[in-house]
Image (cartoon, protein in one colour):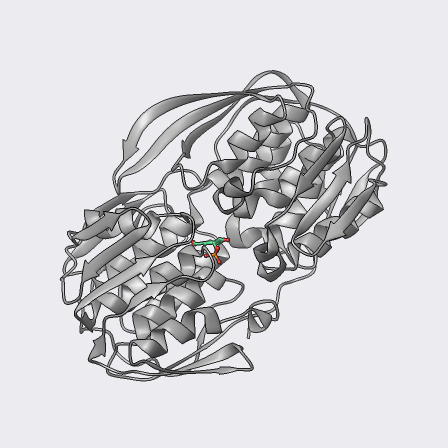
Length: 439
Ligand code: S3P
C-alpha cells in the first residue's frame, strides 16, 4: 500500500500576491473522465487532465482492469474505452492511494462486472467510511464486503444488478455517482433523490457521453443499459485548488489578482458566496462552457477587509472541500464566524474540523470546536508555529495561505499529499507571492 513521503513547508510571514495564476485541472472531473472513458465505446480525448496522485491512482486501477490509457503524467490523455462489458479482472488488489472519490466511484463501476475486485488505499483511505456506498449498491443486488465499514472493499462482481429508487441520507456526490455508475449496468430505471444538491459533474459528463438522464427537482433518474459513446472532455482548472489563491487574494492582493480558466459549476462555488457575505471583492468573468458542459471563468480578486459571518447551512455542501481555507479567511476577519451543519468534514482525508482547529490553536486563534462545525473569532494578525497537516493536502495548503497574515514563520508537517490534488503548488504559490519553501 502506498504511504506518503514525509515533507515539510516553511512559509515566511507577510507579503502579498499579485498578477495571475493558473491552477491544475479539476480532480473530480479528471477522475470521471477516466472512468466514463474506460466504459465508453471509442477513444476519449481529455485535455487539462490533472496528473496528480489521486487521478493517476484511478488511471493505474483502470489499466490494471485492461484499459489502455495514453499520455498520463501530461495534461492531454487518451482513454481507449473497453465498452460496457470489456473490463478484465485485475491481477491483484487495486490500490487507490489517498483517493476517496476513486474508491467510491470504482465500487459502483465494479459492482456489475463479471469478475471480483478488492480495493485498498493508504492509511487515511483505509479509515474512511465505505458503507455509505456499499449499502445502496447491495440494495441493487451487489455483493460487497467492507472491514468494519472501511476498506479493504471486496466486491464479488454481479452482472444483472437491478435499479433502485434511493433517497440519499447525506448530500454526497460520491455516493450519487457510484449508484449512477452501477445503474448503467442495471436492469430498470435508477432513481436518486438528494436532500440538498451536491456536485453534478457525473450527470453533466454522462450526458456528453450520450446518456439520457432526467432531473425533476431533487430527483434524478436514468434507464440502465444505455451505452456510452466516447467524447472529448476539456477539464477546467479546479475550483478547489483556485480556492487557496482566492482567499490569498482577499487577504493580501496588492492589486487585481486573477485565477484563470477556473471551473465555476454552481454546485462547487459556495466559497464565493461565503466570502462575499464577509465583504470580499471578487469578480467573475465567464469564458463559456468547456467541453463536458462545465462553465468556466477567470476569477478576479482584490484585497478587502473581511468580517465574520454565520455561514448559511445551505452553502455547506457547495463549499465542502473549501472549509480549511475558509477557516483561515475567517481567522483573519473581524469578529465571529460560525459554521454548523458541516459534520461531513469529519470524514474527509482527515477529520478536517479537528485538524483545522488544532492548526488555528497553534496560530493563537480563539475558537470552539463544535460536533458539526466551529465557532471562531478573527484576529488582526496570526501567530506562527508548527502545523500538523495529518497528511491532508487541503489542510497543508490552507495554512500556507495563513502565513500571508502571520507575524512569525509557519512550518507545516506531512505535506507530501499536496501532490494528490495540486502538483506544483509550491512553484505556483511562490510565483503568486507566497514566501514558501519545501524542506
Ligand atoms: C467529490 C465529492 C465530495 C468531495 C470530494 C470529491 C467528488 O465528497 O468532498 O473531495 O468528486 O464526487 P462527498 O461526496 O463525500 O461529499
